[in-house]
Image (cartoon, rainbow, N blue to C red):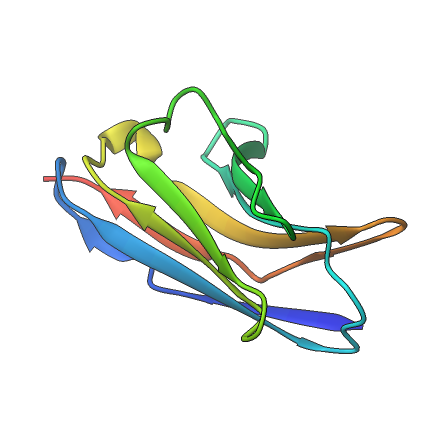
Length: 115
C-alpha cells in the first residue's frame, strides 16, 4: 500500500504562483509515473502533468509554459510549481502514482485562484 499526502494548496490571486508537493510512503517497490490531476466543479478529473521515473514529462495543453513538474526519486516526492495562475485553474488537485497494475491517489488539496 502506498500513501500519498499533498500539501501547498490555498488561495492565490490571478497571475500568482503556488507550489504543490506530494510525498509517497508505504510499501514502495517502484513507481513508474508520478503526477498531478485536478477536478473542478462540474468537470471530470483531468491530467495536469506527469513525470516518469526517468524524467519524461507530460503536460496538459492548458498548463504548458506555466506549470513545471519535478520529481525526487530518493525522497519519493513530486512537486508542481504553478505560475501565472488563472481562475480556471481552480480545482482540487490530486497526487497520483502509477505502476501497473497499481494506482494510488492522495486525498486532494484545494487550489483557488480568485481576486
